[in-house]
Length: 260
Image (cartoon, rainbow, N blue to C red; front, side, top):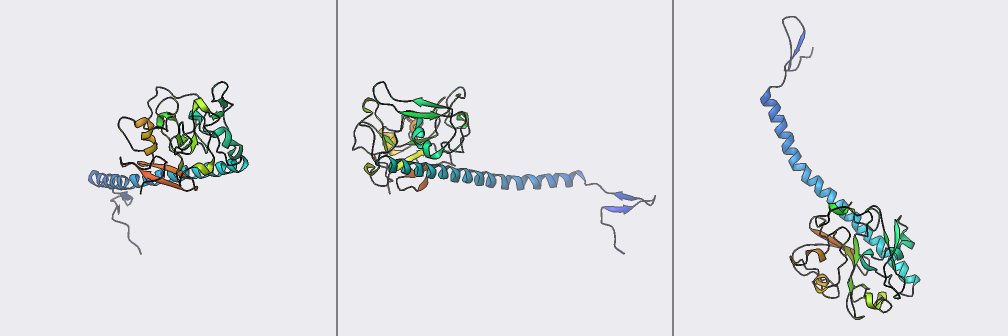
């Protein structure tokens, strides 16, 4: 015949009596659980961040595929990167993302160029690590906007057609500011994560400190959004996506080609 466990005994009345845990035993169990949670939660957080970074990279690959379709359909011309709206209006023919409004982005008598705005930060045009502007560690606004622009941004250089960068954007010369795909120098960066620094998106990505993508305390709002555990995703001309860590050092040359 089997015996009862140590925590069960038969009392004088013949009934089973359950011996409860002592306070010390309960505290030991709680301490062990707390230690295990402390060990597991950072690992789970890191795994979640990795999944979000991979999802962001998939967004950028979809953007590259849509860009190549646009290039094939438009005699090698890249879609216009209109202001802070990116090239969403032109890429959406292929990506078919739901949007709120079509926005006119060009000055009067400078051609008709558009971008799209969205009511939610979701879908291919938005990094999944940022679900609303105020969740960005760089957000400096006072309220959520009613509509959002894409959290991705194309590399841009102003004024001269022989400058580096992907899209050309010069408000004064819209007709001359567009670029053909083959004019992108080397295997440079096309698109990167962009940080939210105010109620909308910081549009600046074209000055010398941005061309280098070197973090500067003087120009933090002009930098890529290093939001993936201190890393940022970059989409290259050949379609591959690579994450770079923020080290404070210069990452790319003036043509947005990586510095080895």
